[in-house]
Image 1 (tube, rainbow, N blue to C red):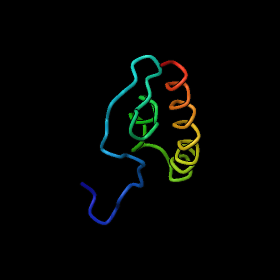
Image 2: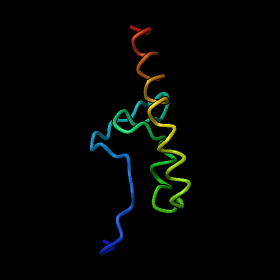
Image 3: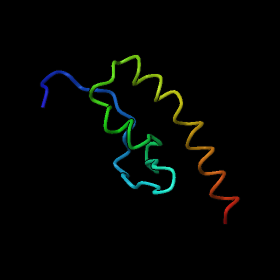
Image 4: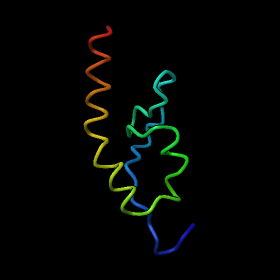
Length: 67
């Protein structure tokens, strides 16, 4: 681990992926974003994190419509 260096993350420890969208149902990140997270700059991580509430809301709304 990196003592004194915590990487900000939206992880909710609910790591369940939607296979069709390749989206984590806990945090809303894509598989690619999760894989690259440690290499992203703080600004890039913040950009992704700012998109997540809307992304998860859209996903949840589509699930309600589907059934």
